[in-house]
Length: 262
Image 1: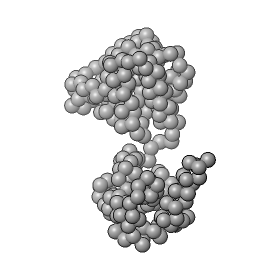
Image 2: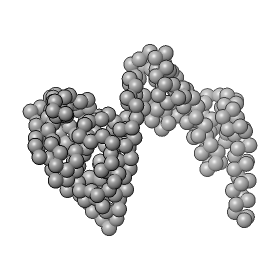
Image 3: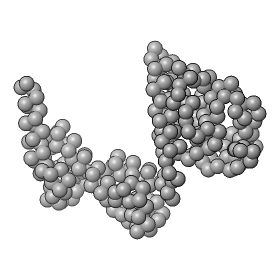
Image 4: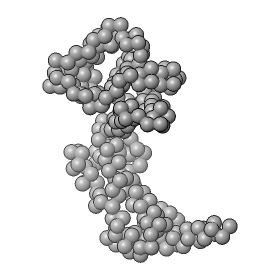
């Protein structure tokens, strides 16, 4: 069972902000920082970077303060008897988030469910908290982040969301303000595939969707998926999918027809 007491996101505080509760709260406190901050950890005041999370257990000393022109965070104070909360491997110490935007979006949804309750809000809040803590558990358990890992993750999201763009390694490198060679080495190290392989995978996935759910000609689909040459598209599709675009569409239509007849 979970019960949210207070929750907010993108809360902004001035540069002299200090939060000091020596005896802690009588409930859980979870923070996601958007700016650097100083936290009291193991008897020492230390600076931790933006895009960090920290979970304070009930009655755990809490002290943190701004260390820049302002301090911004998402936060939630809540009661919980769920093991996915109490067994989080890292508590009382900030840890980096590989995908802070994802967690921030979950905080927004939790805030909306809490402030505008409905008949299903309790169930929604529980599910959202489970997803959030699953992400936090992954962040606790992962190896230290490689340089630029967050920027590369954002780039990968943009590639998958817009595979039709005219992606090239130099264009990607320019977006991240690094050399093309360094980008390719880091990308391969973090994602175990190349950035251009991700572009191709995204384009072929989009093409499959278009072939399955539209009647557009193959040439039009090729253009919409970022290919200026339909022959090149067909070769790349066959190399990835094992069959030509036309054969893929025909096979899918045959399968659907058989399912309907059954």
